[in-house]
Amino acid sequence: MAPHPSAQFVEAAFNCAGGQFQLSYTDPEQKLLIRHHLLSLIQDFPYFAISMDSYAHNDGTVVNLVCAMASLRVSSSAPPVPIIIWVHEDYPQAAPMVFLDSSRLDYDRHISPCHPYVDSSSGSIASPYIHSWEFPWSNLRDLVQNLVHLFSLDHPLGVKAQGGSRSGSRHPSYASKNEAIDRLSGMLHVDVMVARSETDAEVEGLLQLQLELAERAEALAGGVGSLWLERRSLRVAVRDSREMANELADWLGRVDDGGRKGAGTGDVEELFVAADEESETRLGCVAGDKAVEETIYALDEAVSNGTMGFEDYMKQVRMLAREQFSYRAMLLKLDINLNST
Image (cartoon, rainbow, N blue to C red; front, side):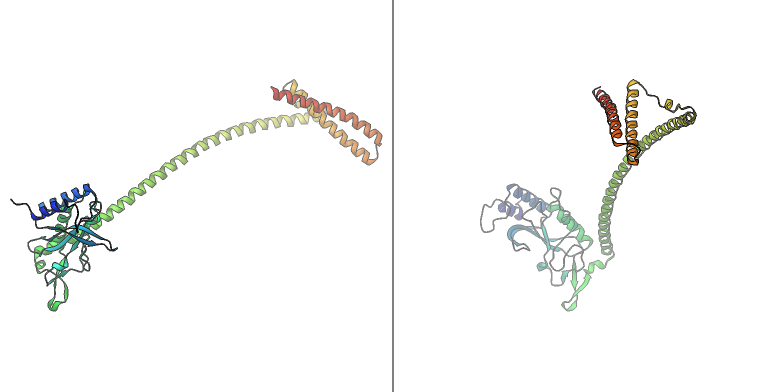
């Protein structure tokens, strides 16, 4: 059996080392992969013709690309769909560019203006398979199979009305019951795809919301734990405060009773008892220091009133100052001993 002409062309094109139409694919591994995908396409759809030509991008860049052309047979009752597939220079990371070739349409055919996947002005085909193109799972053979399925459900060609004007009517075969069912199936297929896309987006949003709620629940649990620890510490503080308040109330009661007793007996000082000898010494020094201060203040008042002469005042102040110095020296010594221990 003779080799397929397109297969021979593919072998020759990717073995070409130069020339006017040198291909714009630079990576050797990329070339091998494109060659493999083209041969796989020809094996399942042998009516495809493979060639190479210059392609001008929208930005004006011109590249030499491989293209595959065929009149796609989508059903036995509907006309074939002439398409051309340009293999992008960044293939397979970039999806191929697919067009419905209006130049090969019969004179009574035109591209339907309301087709969901075909642009009637440019002939560009943008199927869901192309939009979701992802290497290594996407390839040319599966792309063509997907187009056959879609166009069998919703054919992209309409029929011109009499007089050359265009009409929105479909091919006459669509008037049959079977084609009406096929068209309805295509519409349902599109609706299912849209609903699935919306459902996926909603599920993703709900998953994100679930993560946020889980983070908030964790934060709330931490906050509740902190509040519980604070509540326990406050209970302990309240209990200690109550005990101290009870002790203070008992002490105040004893002081009040002792004060009333001491008012008539002169034993008020017996209520204040030092804990040890050092505390007793410190208490005596503080009391003596305060007493000297009060005495000096009283002498100042006496001098101001004229009841004491200045010489007597100075003599008494010197004596009191020496006594106050001894008290304060003793307190300083006690403080030094306390800090050293």
